[in-house]
Every structure is written in C-alpha cells, then in structure tokens.
Length: 235
Image (cartoon, rainbow, N blue to C red; front, side):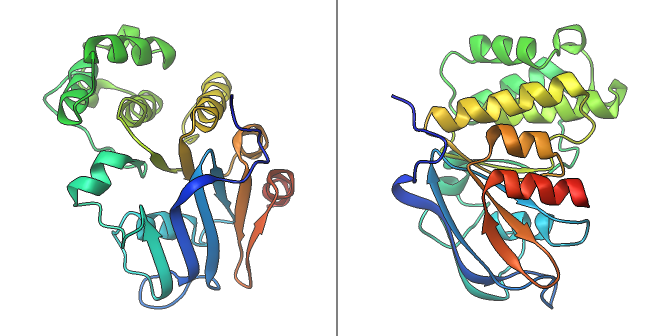
C-alpha cells in the first residue's frame, strides 16, 4: 500500500530542523523549523537569494548552521561520511562529471561506487527514462547544458538512497522532462523514499510535494503545496 499524499511520515525523521539559522556568517532568513521522513517530498521555495540553496548546502554539511539544531539521519550532516553517502543522493546542480568518461560510463561507475545490484539494467532503464540513449557514448564536454542536467539527475536516481537532496532539478529541462521529473518524485514518495528539493517550478510542487517551506526575508513557514505553488506564481 502506498502512502497518501497528506499522510504523516512513518518511522524516524530523516531530516529534523529546529530553529536552524542558515547563511554565510550572518542569517539570510529567519530560523527554519521542519521535519521530514519516509514518504515526504518537501519543496523549499522563495525568491532568488531567499536561502533555498543555502539551506540545502547546510543540510549536506557544506555549511555549518548558524544556530538551532539540524540532524540528517539522526546526526549532524556530514557529506564526507560513508553512512551519509550510502543513504543520501545529492545533486546541488554543479557539473560534477568524470571528464574522461562517457555518459554511460559515468552512470556505471556511480553504480559500482554505491554497490548497485544489476547496474547494467539500472543504467539502461535510466538512460531510456531520461532520453540519454543518443548521447550514451558522449563525453561531458560535448553535451549541452540541458543534457548535462539530465545526466546528473540520472546519476542521483541511480543510487541506493533513503533521502534525495536536489537543488532546482528542473533547471535547463524542457517541459516534457519537467513532467518526467515530477513523475519520478511521485514514484520516490510512493515508494517510501524522501526528497528535499529547492525549486522555482510551481507545477513540480503541485504534482509531487507533500508540503513546502516558504522562505522570505521575514519568515520561514511550512505550508501546503498549493499555497507554496501560488507563492512561486507571485514571484
């Protein structure tokens, strides 16, 4: 049985933020409080500069919180730890490629590094899903920005995981790929996975999110998806 969209998380929290301050030496928004677990897709929305990417960078341990308590998998986030990397698939939007490997080789190596069972089948399925077949034997330097975006998303979805952290995954995707992304997020949610993502796409929020964190200069509020999508429409 899959979890209904509005159901509360089951089991221990995967992310717990209690009055967390985020920023680069000084806060970029008010303290943030939310928790999420299996079956949650939490969208972080707000204007450019509101702190969306800063929150995600803090959640993967690249920035220290400026206050409050933040736990990922029940501990202080540390993207360098084996435990964190085994359970959290991260795509923060940078072009993190192996420059001498083709698209398929990049995905296969990601599988091997994370102990994926039947990697050839898993890669083949994702290559088809993300429309990468024609560029499977292409090096990253020969790809367009949209193609690179699709490869990095496929690399995140290829990994075993309890939690995905994605920074504006819809960027540089066409309308069809944005719909596919929303469908994949729904599948992740209904399969018991969890996703924390920053996004500017109201349709992704409406289709996939269970709730959202709306960041402004004066507030950090947890709201229903439709309210967050309307906030994006007003930006």
